[in-house]
Length: 597
Image (cartoon, rainbow, N blue to C red; front, side, top):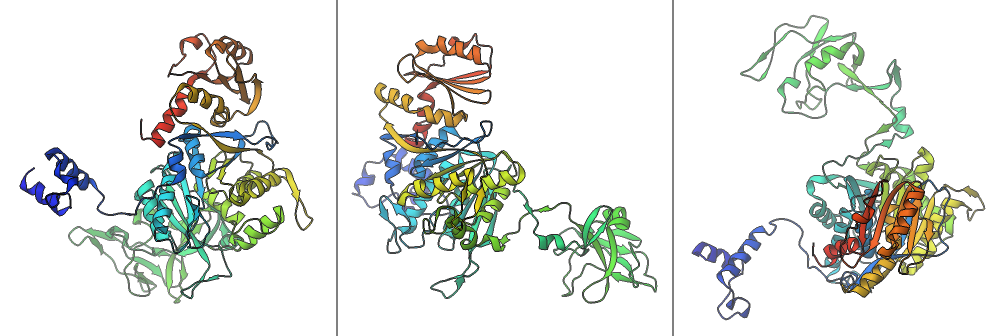
């Protein structure tokens, strides 16, 4: 180690006083490695004391699987996708989904605990309150683990939105920047969710929350929202191309482009305007005007009423091409003739604003009251507004066949919103909801609500509400041993059926001859099939079924190793993929729980 490196190490606290047992036995290579580690350490960002979590530690000794809750499945349309509810800690559920849905999810909505200091969330079986000195570190540790698992589920063009309030907005923004990349921050929206306001210690009446939108990558693009009637009514005029409103041609911003700053000669009687003869002055980087206005004209420049220099909306070339159809002269607010252009309503959809303030975003009116009308009062605190969820879904995915994940599902508003959207526009979206069963949330709130919305129900006011349709299945998380021995591998294979069906979206049973040696299970959805072989001696029987049924197949064959079984299926003409189980599952779990590749 040279003197410069040694001084750096001392200043970083790597090299301490002689006799410290931590460093006495360090070699030169040890010090250099530590210096390199410190050099790579982030200079700016969010730092917290990482706290261990029981559910994370448990996954090192027990692997999560799914078990379907008997008698809860709802099938309204065999050809439609199946919607899912997973009951269990969302760390388990997200881990399972990292096998079944890695890179398959279009959009994620997450409404985590807000960490207000009230006893409203649990960490390692204890409620976290405002007196906990590590309240923020526990929350950040909790969120960081789940956000990283969630990120890998999104498609490259996928978007996640996370709602939060003032207690953690600053820390969550930095955490989201770290997990998803600051460059993928699409926007932060303020939602007026409590019009009546909630009193606070500071004296303010809090009436809002935030929604942070992040893309999985630069390919993510936000969707549009339908215009409100108030926004539509702004376009009071119309021509052959449709509705429009007159907008001042002076831009509301200033750019560095000097060619967007030029004089316009406007007729004083508002009958027209023209671009005078100009010459570009290279030295001055501005236009020289080669003629004077007539007595009937006045010069108009892009300078606002405060005297600030702006720019025009379009270049001279664009103006010359559209002036007769898209532009005109009108009196501005000060009574001066000014150039205007036609701001057109191209359609009834528009890019969302960063402030959402609609009456139906009220969490009490369209959240609590709606939920109470479906399942009865006082079953769940602070449900989200159905309409705020609908608009959030439209922004995070414009696809009508999108897969939407909510891993803090609570009362199931996201599922309700997906079903409502499908009914409105004929979409084929599907949802995956994940929630624990604290206070029987999953079994007595989430499932009953979504089931009633699908099938139809009579409200607490006696109104008959038609069902929205859809298919729905209810799963719980369970566990098998993580020790990589033959017994546990066999056990995981037997318990993996629901995971494989979820991965392939094939839940309709075709053949279920048990899970003993030689047994085969087959499930389908349309012309797609999933075949599960629990002993390779049953492969010939499965091949006969494949030949008989046709279609596209995903086949899973039990193997204690990592056999591919390609040769056994080489003579099958149908499109078929073959994977060994449980190795395909274990490979994912090793990466998540032990860091192994």
